[in-house]
Length: 181
Image (cartoon, rainbow, N blue to C red; front, side, top):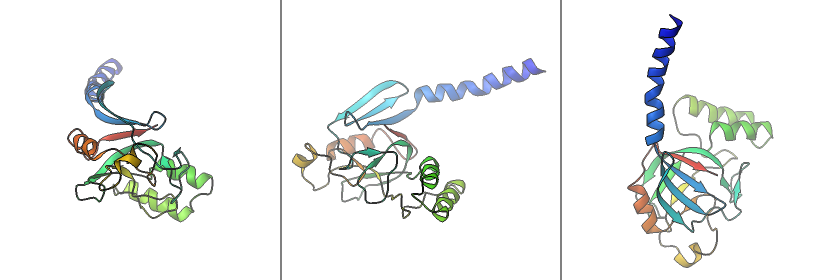
Protein backbone atom coordinates (compact mmCIF):
# COMPACT_ATOMS: atom_id res chain seq x y z
CA UNK A 1 0.00 0.00 0.00
CA UNK A 2 2.71 2.61 0.79
CA UNK A 3 4.34 2.06 -2.64
CA UNK A 4 0.99 2.54 -4.41
CA UNK A 5 0.41 5.73 -2.42
CA UNK A 6 3.88 7.00 -3.32
CA UNK A 7 3.28 6.32 -7.03
CA UNK A 8 -0.08 8.09 -6.85
CA UNK A 9 1.52 11.12 -5.19
CA UNK A 10 4.20 11.23 -7.89
CA UNK A 11 1.56 11.17 -10.62
CA UNK A 12 -0.39 13.94 -8.92
CA UNK A 13 2.75 16.08 -8.56
CA UNK A 14 3.95 15.69 -12.16
CA UNK A 15 1.44 18.13 -13.67
CA UNK A 16 2.40 20.74 -11.08
CA UNK A 17 6.06 20.57 -12.09
CA UNK A 18 5.15 20.79 -15.77
CA UNK A 19 2.91 23.78 -15.10
CA UNK A 20 5.77 25.54 -13.25
CA UNK A 21 8.06 25.03 -16.25
CA UNK A 22 5.42 26.57 -18.52
CA UNK A 23 4.37 29.34 -16.13
CA UNK A 24 4.68 32.82 -17.57
CA UNK A 25 5.82 35.18 -14.83
CA UNK A 26 7.44 38.59 -14.37
CA UNK A 27 10.84 39.25 -12.77
CA UNK A 28 11.51 42.81 -11.65
CA UNK A 29 15.22 43.39 -10.97
CA UNK A 30 15.41 46.56 -8.88
CA UNK A 31 19.22 46.56 -9.01
CA UNK A 32 19.50 46.35 -12.80
CA UNK A 33 16.23 48.29 -13.34
CA UNK A 34 14.78 45.68 -15.67
CA UNK A 35 11.49 43.86 -16.09
CA UNK A 36 11.77 40.40 -17.61
CA UNK A 37 8.91 38.23 -18.79
CA UNK A 38 9.84 34.62 -18.19
CA UNK A 39 8.38 31.27 -19.13
CA UNK A 40 9.79 28.90 -16.55
CA UNK A 41 13.49 29.79 -16.71
CA UNK A 42 13.37 30.98 -20.34
CA UNK A 43 13.51 34.73 -21.05
CA UNK A 44 10.66 35.79 -23.35
CA UNK A 45 11.07 39.57 -23.23
CA UNK A 46 13.20 42.07 -21.30
CA UNK A 47 12.52 45.76 -20.71
CA UNK A 48 15.48 47.92 -19.69
CA UNK A 49 15.62 51.28 -17.95
CA UNK A 50 12.49 50.93 -15.86
CA UNK A 51 11.71 53.24 -12.95
CA UNK A 52 10.89 52.24 -9.38
CA UNK A 53 10.16 54.18 -6.20
CA UNK A 54 12.26 57.31 -5.86
CA UNK A 55 13.70 55.95 -2.58
CA UNK A 56 14.58 52.54 -4.07
CA UNK A 57 13.45 49.06 -3.02
CA UNK A 58 12.60 47.97 0.53
CA UNK A 59 11.46 44.93 2.49
CA UNK A 60 10.01 47.27 5.13
CA UNK A 61 7.84 49.64 3.08
CA UNK A 62 5.50 52.17 4.71
CA UNK A 63 2.84 54.33 3.12
CA UNK A 64 4.25 57.42 1.36
CA UNK A 65 7.90 56.39 1.81
CA UNK A 66 8.30 56.13 -1.98
CA UNK A 67 9.96 52.71 -1.86
CA UNK A 68 9.13 49.70 -4.01
CA UNK A 69 8.31 46.60 -1.95
CA UNK A 70 10.39 43.49 -2.54
CA UNK A 71 8.64 40.13 -2.59
CA UNK A 72 6.39 37.71 -4.45
CA UNK A 73 3.10 39.06 -5.76
CA UNK A 74 0.35 38.37 -8.28
CA UNK A 75 -1.29 40.77 -10.71
CA UNK A 76 -4.66 41.32 -9.05
CA UNK A 77 -6.40 43.56 -11.58
CA UNK A 78 -5.73 45.57 -14.72
CA UNK A 79 -7.01 49.10 -15.28
CA UNK A 80 -6.87 50.01 -18.99
CA UNK A 81 -8.06 53.58 -18.26
CA UNK A 82 -5.29 54.61 -15.88
CA UNK A 83 -3.64 58.01 -15.99
CA UNK A 84 -0.45 55.95 -16.46
CA UNK A 85 -1.81 54.51 -19.75
CA UNK A 86 -2.43 51.07 -18.23
CA UNK A 87 -2.10 49.92 -14.60
CA UNK A 88 -1.50 46.32 -13.47
CA UNK A 89 -2.17 46.22 -9.72
CA UNK A 90 -0.26 43.79 -7.52
CA UNK A 91 -1.63 42.13 -4.39
CA UNK A 92 0.44 44.13 -1.90
CA UNK A 93 0.64 43.88 1.08
CA UNK A 94 1.12 40.13 1.26
CA UNK A 95 0.94 38.12 4.47
CA UNK A 96 4.76 38.06 4.56
CA UNK A 97 4.83 41.86 4.55
CA UNK A 98 2.11 42.02 7.21
CA UNK A 99 3.87 39.48 9.49
CA UNK A 100 7.17 41.37 9.34
CA UNK A 101 5.42 44.71 9.87
CA UNK A 102 3.50 43.43 12.90
CA UNK A 103 6.68 41.92 14.38
CA UNK A 104 8.63 45.17 14.06
CA UNK A 105 5.78 47.47 15.07
CA UNK A 106 5.09 49.11 11.70
CA UNK A 107 1.42 48.08 11.78
CA UNK A 108 -1.08 47.53 14.56
CA UNK A 109 -2.65 44.17 15.41
CA UNK A 110 -5.91 45.51 13.91
CA UNK A 111 -4.19 46.31 10.60
CA UNK A 112 -2.57 42.87 10.59
CA UNK A 113 -5.97 41.29 11.18
CA UNK A 114 -7.48 43.29 8.30
CA UNK A 115 -4.76 42.05 5.93
CA UNK A 116 -5.05 38.49 7.23
CA UNK A 117 -8.86 38.42 6.96
CA UNK A 118 -8.70 39.70 3.38
CA UNK A 119 -6.19 37.02 2.36
CA UNK A 120 -8.12 34.27 4.15
CA UNK A 121 -11.33 35.43 2.47
CA UNK A 122 -9.78 35.52 -0.99
CA UNK A 123 -10.24 39.30 -1.15
CA UNK A 124 -7.70 41.94 -2.19
CA UNK A 125 -5.62 43.11 0.78
CA UNK A 126 -6.60 46.48 2.26
CA UNK A 127 -4.79 49.36 0.60
CA UNK A 128 -5.13 51.81 3.48
CA UNK A 129 -2.92 50.32 6.22
CA UNK A 130 0.36 51.93 7.24
CA UNK A 131 2.03 49.60 4.73
CA UNK A 132 0.41 51.52 1.89
CA UNK A 133 -1.02 50.10 -1.27
CA UNK A 134 -2.22 50.95 -4.76
CA UNK A 135 1.00 49.55 -6.20
CA UNK A 136 1.62 47.90 -9.53
CA UNK A 137 3.28 48.04 -12.92
CA UNK A 138 2.30 50.92 -15.18
CA UNK A 139 3.30 53.12 -18.07
CA UNK A 140 4.34 56.76 -18.08
CA UNK A 141 0.98 58.07 -19.31
CA UNK A 142 1.30 61.73 -20.24
CA UNK A 143 4.43 62.04 -18.09
CA UNK A 144 7.91 62.83 -19.33
CA UNK A 145 9.78 60.07 -21.18
CA UNK A 146 12.99 62.00 -20.52
CA UNK A 147 12.51 61.99 -16.75
CA UNK A 148 11.49 58.32 -16.89
CA UNK A 149 14.75 57.51 -18.66
CA UNK A 150 16.90 59.28 -16.06
CA UNK A 151 15.50 58.83 -12.54
CA UNK A 152 13.41 56.59 -10.35
CA UNK A 153 10.29 58.72 -10.07
CA UNK A 154 7.41 56.59 -8.78
CA UNK A 155 5.81 56.50 -5.34
CA UNK A 156 6.63 52.76 -5.15
CA UNK A 157 5.28 51.33 -8.39
CA UNK A 158 7.25 49.84 -11.26
CA UNK A 159 7.09 52.01 -14.37
CA UNK A 160 7.89 51.16 -17.98
CA UNK A 161 7.22 53.17 -21.12
CA UNK A 162 3.72 53.34 -22.60
CA UNK A 163 4.77 51.11 -25.48
CA UNK A 164 6.28 48.59 -23.07
CA UNK A 165 3.19 48.43 -20.81
CA UNK A 166 0.98 47.73 -23.82
CA UNK A 167 3.29 44.94 -24.99
CA UNK A 168 3.53 43.56 -21.45
CA UNK A 169 -0.28 43.49 -21.19
CA UNK A 170 -0.33 41.13 -24.16
CA UNK A 171 2.02 38.70 -22.37
CA UNK A 172 0.58 38.59 -18.83
CA UNK A 173 -2.78 38.88 -17.10
CA UNK A 174 -4.60 38.78 -13.79
CA UNK A 175 -3.03 36.04 -11.66
CA UNK A 176 0.43 36.30 -13.23
CA UNK A 177 3.21 35.97 -10.63
CA UNK A 178 5.44 39.02 -10.17
CA UNK A 179 8.74 38.58 -8.35
CA UNK A 180 10.31 41.89 -7.25
CA UNK A 181 13.95 41.40 -6.21
